[in-house]
Length: 529
Image (tube, rainbow, N blue to C red; front, side, top):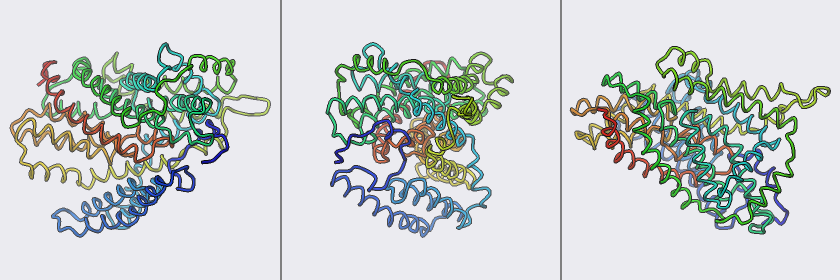
C-alpha cells in the first residue's frame, strides 16, 4: 500500500471507467482474480461467438451473426478483457465487417440525443466538482437533521431524493444533475475516514464500498422513481401508448400514480436492503459528523464567481429539464403544448446548452477567463459516452434485424404460454433480458408489441402483461449499457463492473418478483382492465 496520503478530491475528479491492473491498488488475491478474469475473457469471447455462429438455427443469417457478436461483446464487457468501451467498438466494427448492416446505418445511433445528454451533463459535473459546488450541495444534505450520522441513512436519504426527482424529470437527467453531489458526499465521507485513521494513508477512494452503494442507489433509485408517473421514463409513455392502441383503455395520470406508488415504495425498500447488504459501508456510524460538516462549511466561505456561474448554468439546465414534466402535469401528455415543449426542449439539447454557458460566463472579463476551459471539458469520461453509443447501436440492431422479435416469439411458442400469470412472467423476464443489452426505451418499444399479440392469441387481456413489460423495461441493472443511469454512474469510476453485476442481478430478480406479484393487484385496485 502506498504510504503517501491520498488527495481525495483529485482522485475522484475525472475517475476513469477502465483502469489497467497497474493503475489500481489491489491486494494479491484481488490481483490474481482480476488477471484471471481478464485472461479468460480474451479466449471465451471469440469461442462463444464462434459456437453460436456454428449452431444450426433456422433464423436469418443477419440475426444469427448479430446474436453471436452480441454474446461475444457481453463476455468482453463482463470480464473486462479489453477496456469496456473498446469491447463495444470491436462489436460494432465486426457487425459492419460481417455484413449485418451498412456502416452508415450502424453508426447513426451515435447521434442519439442521449449521447449529447452525457456530454453536456458530464461537462456540468466537471465544473461542479472543479469549483466545489458539488461539495456545498453534499454538505447541505449531510447537515439535514439525523441524516449525516449514519452512512446508511445518507445513502437512503439520497436515494429518496433521487426517486422523487426522477418521477417528473427524466432518469438520465436526474442522475446527471445529482452525480456531482453524490461524488461530493463520497469525498466528505472518504476524507472523514482518512482523518479518523480508519483507512490507510494511500487508500483508493474509488474502491470504497460506501461509494459503490451511493452510486448504485443513484442509478437504481432513478429507475425506481421513474416508474411513479407516466412522464418519469420514456418506456412508460411508449407502453401506455401501445396499450391504449391495442385495448382502447386509457390510463390517466392519476390512475398510473395510484397503481405505481405502492410498487415503487416496496421496490425502494428492497433496493436499500440489497445495496446495503451487498455493499456494506466501511463505517456504520459517522461520529462527530455535525461538527465536521459545520467546520468544513465554514471553510467554504461565500460563493466564488466560478461557483456562482456554475450554479447559474446548473439551474438553467435543471429548469429546462423539468419544464416539460410540469407542462405534462398541467396540460396532459396528449396536448399540443406538451408535444411542442418536449420536442424543442430535448434533454440532450438542453444539456449541451447548459454546458455551453460555462464557456460564456466569465470569472475574469479583463483576462477573458471563463468558468470552464476546454482542457477541463476534455477530461470528462469519453469512454462512457462511447460505451453507451455502442449499446444504443446494439439495441437498434436487435429491433431492425428482427432478432428481438424472433427471440420473443420463439420463446413464447416453445413455452406454450396460455395463462395470465405465465404470459406476465414471460413479459417481465423478456423485458429485463432485452434491457440488459439495450436502452430501456428500446426494450419497451421491442417487447411490448411482442407481448400484446401473444396475450390476445391466448385469450388473455393484454393490459397486465403489457404493463408488466413496460415496468420491467426500466430494469436491466446489470451492465453499464443497460440504462443511461448505469452508464453515468459507471463513468464516475467508483463502481467496478463486478459490483454492478452482483448488485444488479439481485435487484433484477427481486424487482421482477415484485412486478409479477403486486402489479396485477394494483391494476385491479385502481379499476383498470
